[in-house]
Length: 416
Ligand code: ADP
Ligand code: MG
Image 1 (cartoon, rainbow, N blue to C red):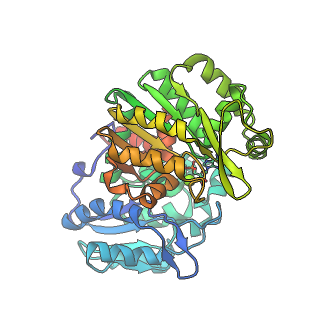
Image 2: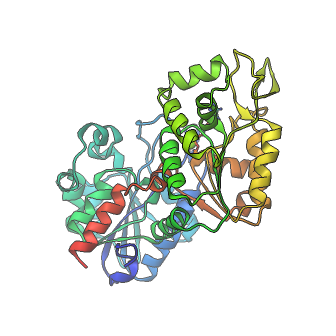
Image 3: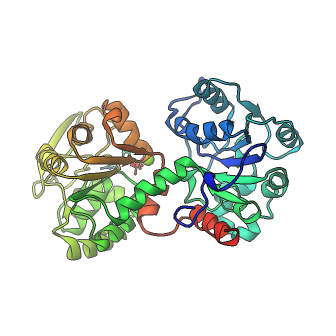
């Protein structure tokens, strides 16, 4: 038991059918039907390997999204192939989620064998639209098809999908209602690292916050600043644009339109409140970059043209941020400093990410795009810990209990 949740040490697993929820959601190359990245699959390996060694019959449930949010229709078949290469043994796959074919495949498993079911979001009750529209509680989720069909075949449920822990869906939150349940090793590790970051990071602790998921980013900022455990927050991306606007700086018509069109104008007020309370902690860019025709132009704050669209932090800011990172003991990073996908607008992110590689501080990077940037700039191996979660990680750091954690904790209380 750890954090009030059972671990895989708490159950005898030999010969048991163990239903494991993993998060292997990766970007897909639709032309070739292959996965563009496999880091999340690799992160699932320790739990699966341990279950194999313990002689469990292992049933993996996973989802795979598409490029467009809420269109989740892509098979997990390529994942089985990748996983079997990583584990160097055959991994069963069935193109069914909880129908007769899936159930038959589960019943035929032998000790130590692994079966991956097809995309759980092929079942309507697992879809994000269903989650958001109906908001079923966990008891109601336990009556959905997936749970009614699969739970009777399993002895234990293991949740290893930390990256999906902020989702309130049956495959994550309902099995703990009806089965003895534990968190997997990856879940345990991510929980542990992030709760240390939230509670007692080694000081000075610096947060690097950029990217475009501003709603959760602002909530998280509020929590960590209130807790007082953060020395400095270095801002970039859309987060910085909103804070600059809140600080009364001219950020240009295109920047303002981008913020308003995405429904984030309300956050300018939140930004003002944060700046009023924590001005000494929050660092804003002193200069920024935008496109002038096809080339990169940098402007100091105060000299930004009125039609500007800010797409990166400037070089003076990069240098300042690098000094903070160099002198920190802990650095947490989520969200790139600019539109790093663009060859001209990647400079800010590139120089900060290189500083992460060079610092002696313990560095934690999370978020799909942030990790992609670490690969692109060749610093991934030098990062202290790469978190598989993006949304889940930020939500965790807002201090709010994640649905998966609530479900696992309740299961442990019921069944100590
Ligand atoms: P992560 O995936 O690491 O959690 P996000 O998804 O929150 O990060 O943000 C990444 C996206 O933010 C990238 O696609 C990047 O192009 C975009 N972005 C960064 N800076 C800006 C900016 N100034 N304006 C608009 N988009 C930005
Ligand atoms: Mg992203």
